[in-house]
Length: 45
Image 1: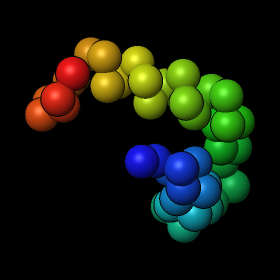
Image 2: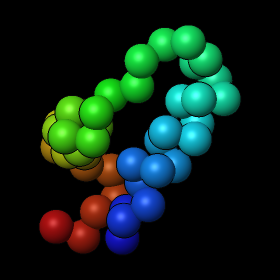
Image 3: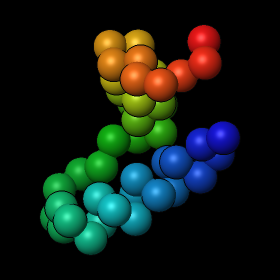
Image 4: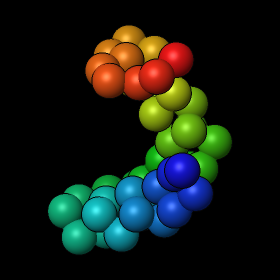
């Protein structure tokens, strides 16, 4: 359902982009939904 998506993002960001600031949670979700709207892929709705 994505309830751990932000925590997963933070873990990934720490490992792959050390020293760079991560998105705050609000910006993360805004970007995630914008990407889903732009590239719907195989969603049911």
